[in-house]
Length: 325
Image 1 (cartoon, helix red, strand yellow):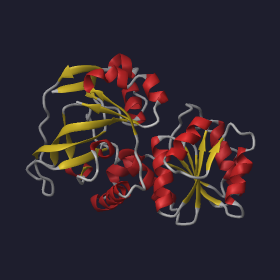
Image 2 (image 1 turned 135 degrees about the vertical axis):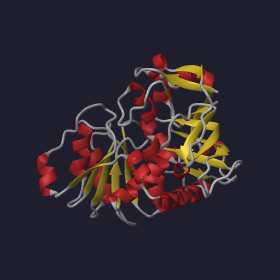
Image 3 (image 1 turned 180 degrees about the vertical axis):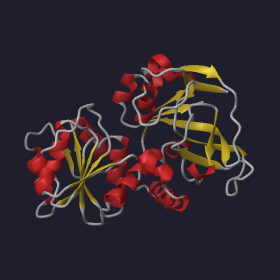
Image 4 (image 1 turned 45 degrees about the vertical axis):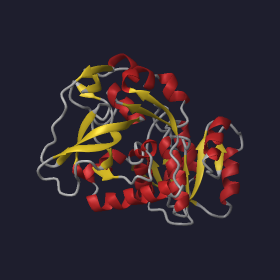
């Protein structure tokens, strides 16, 4: 089968190549899926660079999420069958014509959900939904998060709104504000404005911010912490800047803030099947009724993997980049 492989860590455009690999056979508790579309996520690219928490054995096939059709099942698989259309995430080696996955990581998807939506339904939106529950926020409370125009940020804003949770969505440019407005997300803040913190305070009024999510690091971390309300939760989701967080200990102490690290993939793997299915069912419902929008930037043939993972393509995207084997 065709696959996008690498035999050492490095820059994705330099280490990835198309190679012919054996079609995998499912173990007793696994299914094999014929890939229809696979997503390219930031954590996939970090994995290829060797800078993610998970490091695969070499040679490796890229990718961790896809939609496809089950074409083989292991002897112990009970609830899935050949011919079912499914979405899978937090798996391995999806940038190929076939991949195998534990039945616990695979979810049937309805015909009402198109392939482009189904190919990116689980990883980022599920992370956003798990993050909302991780923060233990309730309807009417406020959450502030940066990098809000990213895949998780957009999903977080839309899914929070569907649950009645209010969000302050922090970005760094007018263009990013436009991205959020295009999917009907409200309460968007541009840090290019000198008075952006005052804008946040004006939006929330007498209310407090119950939780903050930092995906950037550096000085941006401290800026979010300074706006967190007393007793709030500060969750670290990522470090896009590549810089260590700069936090004022006075804010941590006197706000009595709780700092927590969030690793969605790990939590997903440890979550019970029943609980994960509950969240996936909610994602499907939100997507079908229009409360969750997941735009696609472009779809590339697997043969064009270098172009698909190129820095320019990834940095300029406003939706998900997909691969078609």
